[in-house]
Image 1: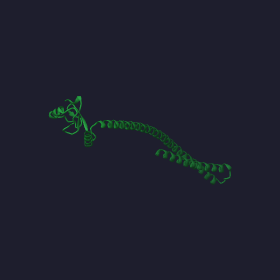
Image 2 (image 1 turned 120 degrees about the vertical axis):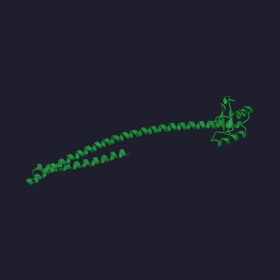
Image 3 (image 1 turned 180 degrees about the vertical axis):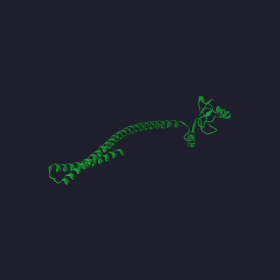
Length: 196
């Protein structure tokens, strides 16, 4: 936006400078016509007219130099505006692509979450109400994790190793009984890798 503003400003500045050059040129041409017509006969007026024509030529030259400098600045500003517009276009394209990828990923996550919710509901129907209630209560207390795997004598919930007495209690418990970690109180899930 700043680059486009600079382009507009330099275009207006160039138009104004070119207008100034045209005014000086027209005045110089008018004076030159008066001089060439022979209408001015007084030596003093002729000298004054020649001096003014020379002064106008210097002024025109100075103004044309200013116009050239402004044109160079305008060209530089226009090039910069084109580069920035191209960069903005590239960023917008990248933004669109990233938004599309984000939306696709969100849709996949939502679909996976829905599948997981349905799978959980299916499993939850097969779990006794008391155990499900205990699990939900523990889950609320422990940041969403109500049960943890017992892996190589260690509770995966609190990451603490069970002592020998606790391990013996877990070994002695029937396979269908609910055992809990003595440290974090989460339900322990026994697997072949439990280290029992």
